[in-house]
Each structure stands twice: as structure tokens, then as C-alpha cells.
Image 1 (cartoon, rainbow, N blue to C red):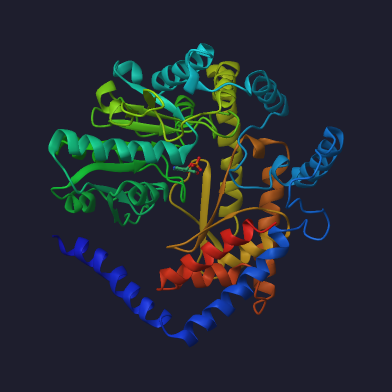
Image 2 (cartoon, rainbow, N blue to C red):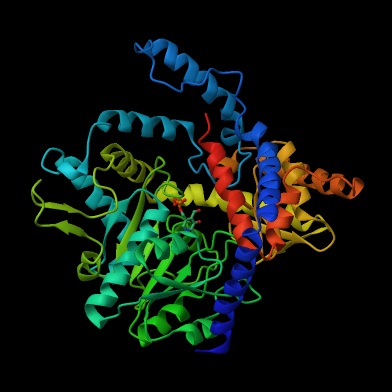
Length: 497
Ligand SMILES: Cc1ncc(COP(=O)(O)O)c(C=O)c1O
């Protein structure tokens, strides 16, 4: 086993063992729980603003409440939350920039909220929409050069990645007899790959990225072992918005007889148009002969309602490894293409409607607006001497600082309503521009608030901030189990009424 690979596996195991021994000491355990409780209590006001203000419904009402009253209550909460996402204060998150388009999605969903493609004989229209979403996406992503390209519609980027990984596991077993499948991914690839590894019994090897934050092809080559079934790259990565060297990685995969997945969840519905607009975009799709699957999220830059994504495969044989069939169940013959059984046909219908209502011209125009806004934001960040843009961003602008704690900048931005993403390794922040931010004045307001936030952090060096200590500690803490404990307790809090 190459040395780098061995060290990468050994280090977390050693710190993990040390951490488990420490946690076994009752005093340490109790102290940790007290610290966790304090941290979680600090998050409560922001995550549970309705506590004590709006009655919690913790039991079914004896008799159903009136629809009018319910709508009134729900409209009020929705109205309170509207400005932050609607007026462009939040990174990524909401991709539809046009309220008319969003209203149209709702109308289409209303037409088909009862539909379910599991019963394709009852709703052949939904099956028609799904097959056409796949065909349109394939044709946009180099499918014209690879006529066998096929796919399915899933519930989101994570499910698309889970399914692609399950497919490579089963393909590796069926075609090469691999019993302990491994997948190699850059450190920046989305955590859905770890989730897939956990769910499907795959070993995921993470390879550190190079100084340009892109996947390191040589290190990937070194990490390939006899159980490797697939390599992965992102177009672009979530943290820094850079496109991995997909051509070199997929050539490597092809030369070794491996699968290659391009995670274009973020970029699938925008990179083709970024290229048409004349920006330099390296090849990432089926035009590259080594690319055997791609995920592309319709619920991001595809401008569909939340809850859909597409996973594409180079040919139907590969896609068959994704399917599930049960031939002996007393309930009858059963088959299902994705993780879910029943699926919301209304979301598939809305996705199809979003794509045909937007068309090539619509995607090109919304991409132009996103890219112009991102360039304005990038110029603004570059004009602040304390900040340094990292990578070579397209529409996700990531930046770090040599002189300031960026997490304190994050806190100050948050108190002005901005929702930015805190990155780690290296500590940085990012803002993912969507059509929501292309509204007049948003980029200007962002840059001016960022400038003020940086000045504020410099002027108040002792100020702690709400999240900065959490991010700071989490970023440097060697005991990742403790960071994981905090995240679990955060999720526990979400489920408290
Ligand atoms: C590159 C990339 N892959 C996968 C995902 C996961 O997508 P989802 O949140 O829809 O599951 C994201 C989400 O931002 C992403 O940016």
C-alpha cells in the first residue's frame, strides 16, 4: 500500500482510539456533555424562534382545525421567513430568481400532487415527463456524442450520488468479482459520497486536493488499488466552486477499466451555459469517453422546485445495476429504479415544466445574470485588502484571510442577516451566487456589508461572536468524534418541538 494512503488511514484511527479512551472516563464524558449542552443552548434562539410564541402542535387535534385558520398560521410563519431567502441574503439555497416561475411550479404541482410514478399505468404522463427530463439533461451534457446515455430522476443530489455509488458497487461485483469495493474521491467531493460508502459497504478513500484546490491526479493514481471500482470528480466542487481535472481523471479511470462519476450536481445545469457565454470551462461531461456517469441537480440551476435531480449513465447496462427488483414477494412482482418506492410525481411534473418553460434561452440568460453578479461580488471581495479569493471561482466565491479570523466575519455577516457558508481546511467562507442574487442592489449590498464586517472585526479584536468559536474549534479539533457529537446534538435540537 503506498505510504500516503497508509498514513491517511492510520492517523484518524489513532486519534479515534485516543478519543474513545478519553470518553470512556466518566468525568470527561460528563464534562463534554455539559459543554455540548452550552453550545446547543447558544444555537436555540436562532433555530427555535417560535418557541413560546406560536403554540406547538405535539398531539393530533381532537377535531381537525379549520383550513382557513391553518393557512393563516402557516402564511404568517412563511411571511416572517421570506425576506432572507427571497431578497438574496442566503448563499445558494434558493435558485429560482423569478417569482412568476416559482408560482408556475406551484400551479403544476397542484395539478399532479396525487401522482406517483410507481403506478406508471395510472399516470403514464409522469413516466413520459421523467423520461423526457432524462433525455433533455443527457442531450445538454454531451449525450449527443454518446447515444446510449440514459438515467433516472431522483429526489436530489444526495440520492443521485448514493445511486451512482451503489451502481458501481454492484457493477464491480458482477463484472469483476470485487467483493470489497473501493471508490476514490478528492477531499472536496460532497459528503454524500461518505454517506453512500456508509450505506452500501463501500470503502471511500479521500485524496487531498492540490494547491489549486482541484483533485490531484497523481495522488489519485497512487491511491488506486485492486478493489477500486470507480473514481470521482466534481464540476464544480461545493466548497470552492472549482472544476476538478475531469478529463485527466476520467482518462485514468478508463485506462484502468474503472467507472468515473462526474458530480455535476452543482454545475450540470449551468456549466454548459457558462461555456456558451465564452468563459473557459474544461470538459466534464459525456464528451469525455471515460465519464461513465453524471449527476446534475434540476432543483439547483435546473430551476425546478426542490426535490429532484438527475443521474445519468453512459449505457443501460450500467443503469441496470442501480435498479431494485423483488421477484418472490407475496405482495406481487416489485421493481423500483431509485431508493424510494412511491415517488412524488408532482415534483417530476414540475421539473419537466420548469425545463420546457425555461428553454435554452432562459438558462443562458439566467446564467449570464449569475456570472455577472458573481464577477461583481468577486471584484468586491478582492477590493478588501484583508481578504483573499481562493481557487478560481466561477459563481461560488470562496475567500480566506491571512490577518483575520474569517469565522468572525461570518458572525458579523450573520448578524446583518447574511447566510454564508463557513469552510474548513483551510478556514474560509463562500457565497454561492444564484439568480436570487442577480436582483438589483444585492451584490452591492453584500460587498458593502462585507467591508463593514471586516472593519468591525478589526475594530473589536476581543469580540467572540456566536458561531466563530464553534467553527474555529471544529476546524482545528483533532478529535472528530467530538465534532460529530455536536452535530448529532444539533440534529436532536431540530427535532424538539
Ligand atoms: C457538488 C455537490 N454535490 C452534491 C450535492 C448534494 O445535493 P443535495 O443537497 O441536493 O442532496 C451538492 C449540494 O450542494 C453539491 O454542491
